[in-house]
Length: 266
Image (tube, rainbow, N blue to C red):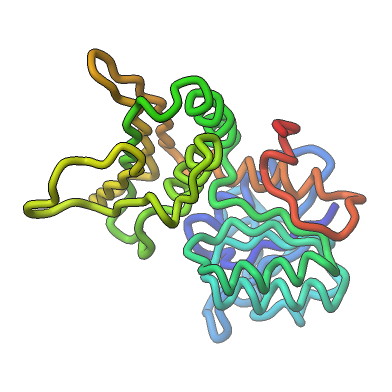
């Protein structure tokens, strides 16, 4: 399979190029950078620090439409939807790791999935997706007697809050408990908020320094607390997961998939 990476000159883009270079059965087909960038025409491998790959950076997907089978996109909601529509039009698969999509944007992505295969997950890490499975199991066993709190930390540059991963963790726990997260989520607390209600799921957010990503889910009751924690120390973990998803998409029919499908955790 030939993979295109958009945002190829960024931190995530370079990690993706490296992960593709190191993986078997997959190759870099295209690297897209911002229109007008001084890196247009530069070898993508040299840009990522893995040596020449014979793939030069271009400005748009239209410039490389014949050079890839699947696109990996970790950009912004607006750009991701544009790219997804392009992939559907040209019968390309897409792996979406973009966070911060609202309900309407997710609905548009689902429309794309009716025409092309899409893997969409707020976190591509294999470890995080295993953690989601553990959270569902814990919630089912512990039930409503345990208070649930989710604490997440990321670098100072992250623009959405809470993280997409934290929200997905909340959704998984809420579903396992028979709740709707929109009805029970509490985002931060300040002032005289009163006692905690039994069925709320709390979120706390930290933004500081260069933290790659940390998530901790508490299940607490009188006398004990269980914590399920995932800590990412390198963006490469997300890149490797995305490449695994891209490889898995080979030959898949149009549809909406997630990392639970990729890892056969359902």
